[in-house]
Image (cartoon, rainbow, N blue to C red; front, side, top):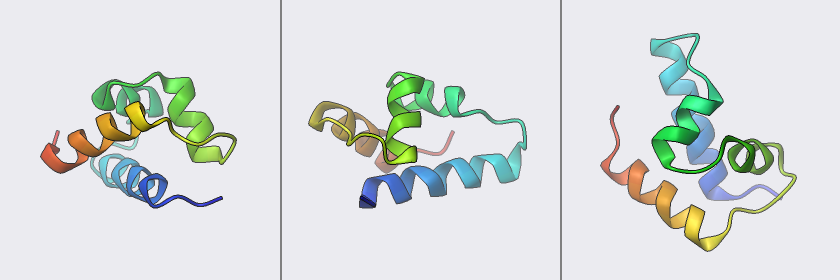
Length: 66
């Protein structure tokens, strides 16, 4: 199940890795304020983000830029 927010998360990870190839999923999770395992499972399609995590991530994406 491909969710629109997951696509935005992937795009953000690709953007940051273009600047710094060693940028980690853990660093992105910290930026978003969620657990790395939550982000990993969402990106792999294993689980769907909770409304709380979705809200956090969207808020950071809207205000973003490192």
